[in-house]
Length: 313
Image (cartoon, rainbow, N blue to C red; front, side, top):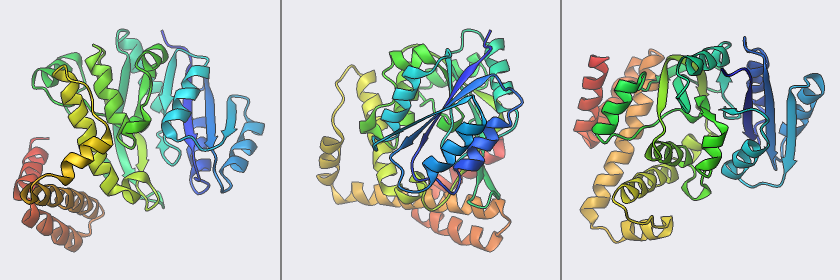
């Protein structure tokens, strides 16, 4: 039975949101945890805010070092965690009040499970809900096995991840060369090693989308790293060694023009479809029509398949 957990937060220049993130943890219905916060060389007031909270709550331990990046920070925090289970959350996201209670209950009911995540609400910088991040087909072992048989990628919201500490360390934690798709790289390696990852059929996190977030400010890098991570996963499945990102990008540069056109069409269509989804959720229907139309013009199949998927839910 899981009786206590270690919560890990890497922080870098997040003075606008870190207080709310910490508050959402301290107010959890399950309270037996340690909160490990590492400031990764912030140049704003993040560290000052963290120190103030640490003075008021003995469950908080903070670290402050020169900038090393999210992967190195989380790997270090995992090694000093006192408990057998690590809970992750990004520095600008918000826990639903009973996230820990529900996630621990889920693991206690599935004692052989090494990792879990959940669905998330998308929120903006003002805490308005602007959409949902949903992972269907992974709520039990049968659905997990089906995805594996279909050779589908097993993905999750990393900010909602809870994983066994020994398992995380055994796999080498997060790998910096795959950032910002290090989460996908980790989950694919987790599954390759024979561990299961299930999704709790509930919304336990609020995942913030804002201009300074990685997925917003580095969309092109995210797109290339996502392709690279998926490609390396396929190489491992085939028994081949991984290649470096530089080699991968050099190969992309040498691709024929038609291949590149298809990539960029897919890239912009995916982002326009995503923005259209946010517009629809916020009932901005004219904006929704505008973005979804352009997405359809760039890649009709992407939009059609998305509507088919939504109709099945």
